[in-house]
Image (cartoon, rainbow, N blue to C red; front, side):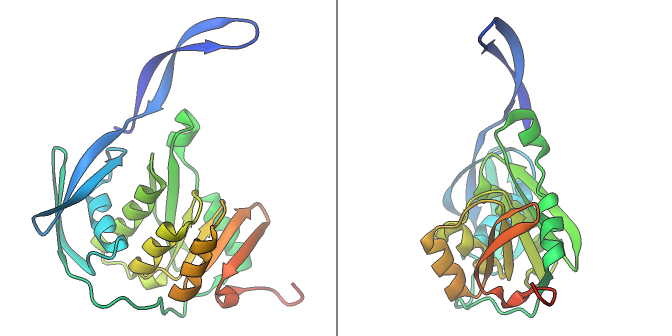
Length: 227
């Protein structure tokens, strides 16, 4: 369950009304990696196995996941320790027209109801393979990455689309997962751009309607001649 109803008072210039409003559910979860407590996450309570698997990989704490157990407010991940970090190496490219298709898929049903959720999507070979919504933009990335990990999908073949801005921490998640291309409708930060450049990640932001801005590694984008 991701949404609940809350009693609220709605005020406009002409009247005051009592109403039931849809709001996002927020819960806290304790994360364990190989039986060691590593932190607490505040998240929307669904896709929790995916959240755990993706979180440890996106944070650079694990290179592979062998299992996830969820019990109450505990998420226990069993995983391999990571190898030495390296830059993202992938021959994946994306056509200009496909960038809009990716972003058109970043539609949050929870946001439509509540105005309080982010969304991320994952594409592979031009197909949508995962979509996640959460109150935290970081969690949406963890969840779609976790889905791919649990389904044994090669993340180096994937493109990530997301709704949130792209600071260094978000770009680092993408790099740790080995995803070569990230597309966002929001803005980057200077450190986010530097992180993408150093990690070999193609960073596309302000992707709205028929336009976008590329901040790092534009060589993966296929443009028609004359554009």
